[in-house]
Length: 182
Figure 1: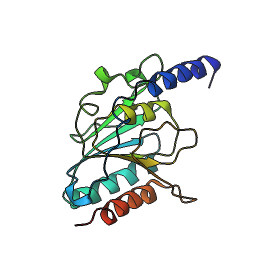
Figure 2: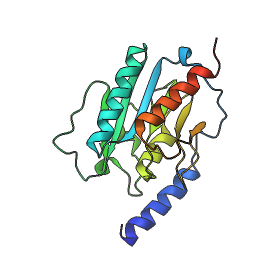
Figure 3: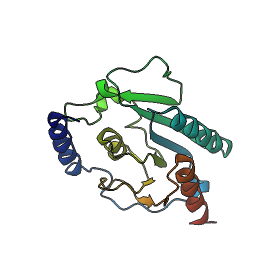
């Protein structure tokens, strides 16, 4: 990353830290049974990530949940192999502001939709991913522990050495099922 991008990221990070509109409030941990709509944010640059996220979304849908996915592609334009679906979207560099934050007017309904839960299924500290996670309307947000990451999650999961999306998601679901059982 060149020094201009580093400066843009630093300013973007500063702007994001000082605009934390939703995540400053404390949210109570929901019961898995009371969660109906889930948003999943992930890094869509690797095929393995997408396959894991699709399996997780399929599992959650089997549990009766409505699931929307938003993947970040670190490219100037959307690659030809990425296809939009009714519940799966992408954003890429063209949809970012000058300071590498998601541009709400170009992202679509994902930012404004009121999710019961947002699952941040990534381990990368990319500013666009953290920015989208911070901007989302959600009753509750969960994500991985990211060294030097911004504070936008209500719960942080430490996966230890097994840093896979599958492990992260299964731990999230496990905690939500165990906590606030009825």
